[in-house]
Image (cartoon, rainbow, N blue to C red; front, side, top):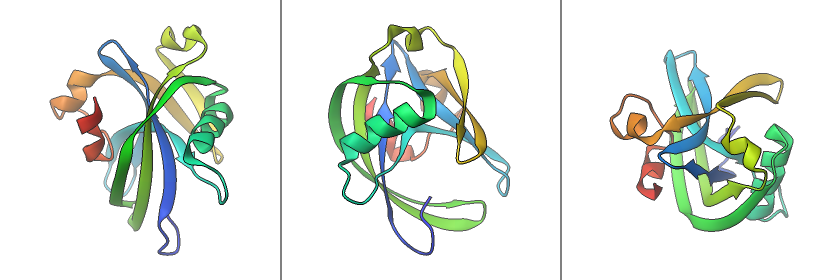
Length: 142
């Protein structure tokens, strides 16, 4: 999340298994809305976005990535918890080095002292509008 009116650069990983995507679940208490997004996180100063992607997956769920391929750059201007945010997203398609991650239905992890859930979700639920994947422009990549 961008703070103090600054644009945040993030790296996110699109991981697909058949007709499902591996995503994290979020919730905005101000709008009372559940949403989903690809896992990843902030790029630190002096760090390449692909390195940030690998680091974030390692920090969040202790997973190594393989077959990393750059998909494109997305811009996301949004509101979360009543505050304006602005991100530039470097989006990558990738896979899990450990095949066991493809067998897990969902897992819980800690991000900045917050308990979060990552899970496999059927793509059709996003395409139908039943579930919200953010940023919405990421749907053009699957």
